[in-house]
Image (cartoon, helix red, strand yellow):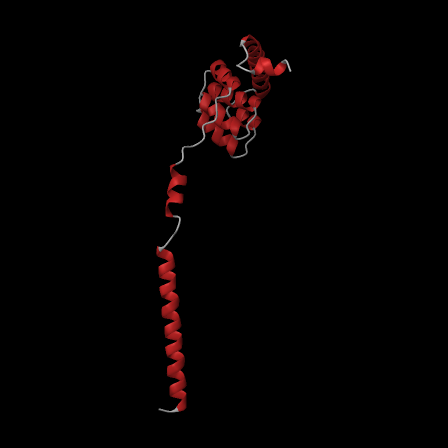
Length: 158
């Protein structure tokens, strides 16, 4: 064997040994995860249920519509007046709230949605404002009639 062949065999042996060692370390590391149950525990946790907004409950009754739909859309940033307008468009057009919401989510303005369903937007807007005002007044009246919860009157006296 000449010198070149010896150097080649030594280099090949060292490279093979390094690859084998690296592969063994990677496999050993992959099988010994110290926190395997944490991911499972995170997935099992119950979702946080937000308390129902009393105003939205009253609004749902006034509009004869789904309180969960109102709550979900209010939580994602749709304002009260927009919610009322979308519900009125749904009722007057005969389309489902989901269909109307899909149009709104595409970025189509409420005015354009109303016009697309052959509805007079200015009268719809007035009706929505009147309904919202009526609901707000009723809500204020009911909240004044409701006695304070334990501890609140004591806090106000200090």
